[in-house]
Image (cartoon, rainbow, N blue to C red; front, side):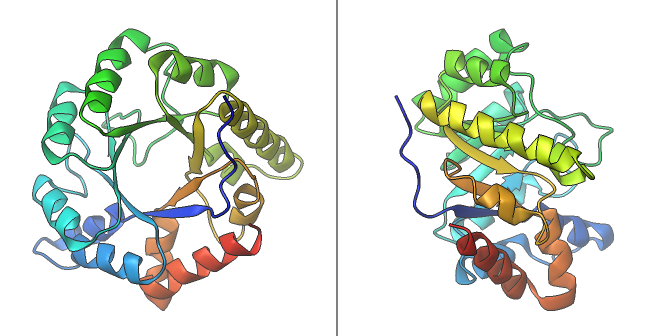
Length: 246
């Protein structure tokens, strides 16, 4: 069953690093909940937050406040642990994106090995789905990972675009082709493809132009740009660049 090609590419904005700045000094400023409201005003379609095991940026008390601050759908990035499953079931976000997580990494490095972790992931995907939470798997753009997502019954995959974002020279086209081909394969098999990681003003348009993609999730770059031009302006510019190619 093919997924219908979306006419408008959604922009989900990850606000984790608003909390990173806050936590660098302590206190309550800058407030991730306020950031969520600004994203909504600027044309964002959703809010992504990643509650990590070590609580390095988003904290438990942030979740409900962010949920209450905006009517936008909330996408909770989470590790495949019992603790995070319990938190997701308690807060009931619109979506939960299962990501790999290692305490020593600065950010999520690489995609989830859904193919190699089927037995661990299956009950988590089932419980999230039964609770009405839309499950996404953050995977590398590879056929075996899409096949694993199908077996797990995940309705969404998000392709890790880090290899594309960091590629140079001829390798850029190679990595882009992988995303193009896997987005088509996912959609052909009834899975809605998303993408994210390392996307910037300079590299977003070739990815945004992929017709099967329904959503891009972008965070670190937009928060970084906001230091210079403000969050509303940074989100609006990304929204414009995406719209120009769709």
